[in-house]
Length: 308
Image (spheres, rainbow, N blue to C red):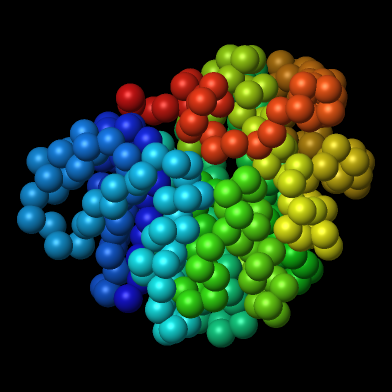
């Protein structure tokens, strides 16, 4: 049995879309589990998908996303290594055939964890929309995951849509991002980390500077405690890594813009990324801020919601 876990946080309308997109391509022997602390999500499932035995609601205890995932890992634990857990979020939705594409990678018994590919649904005709396309198409796809996968190197998955074999890990630390620590655990156990570039997940990205900074700092900060649990964690996301990656992949960077305006936006992105890293270090070293689950406290990025 395979399981698709959708973690949401009161995003009723977007979660409905996430569920619908998954159900439309649900493979045999696969169950869909929606984890959310709010009863409104349970009521939505009962109203919109009545008597659907392929859907199960799991009441998140509202103690953080990682806590809910740990409870589900233990609940769904199976010694059958052909059983696969697929993780995604309630504020995104998968494209047609994405589930099948990510499951294909597990036909190789050496593969333990697989990343999908996030794509932007933002319009490309403004700066933040263009940046969202640039960062996922050039940064995350071409420069990072695709290259590392083709070279057989370790790669980090996307938390928006990734999968791994059941019966290997039953819990993760509560203060690091699941999409960084899970592939590391599999990598250390000798499994390969695969990249399903045709397994697309549609994501809405921030539309203004405050939310953009909040999201990018949160993503970078999720790596700040990795050495506590993984002292030999392969550095993939770092400021120095961004510089090296950019300098060695200039052909991708400067062939991506299609207009003069997009070229200017590309140039503007570099000092903004530098500012983000400096601001993050200031938060960590002087303000003593720490990584926390993104939906909780003041870290929610509201402009990334598609419907709610």
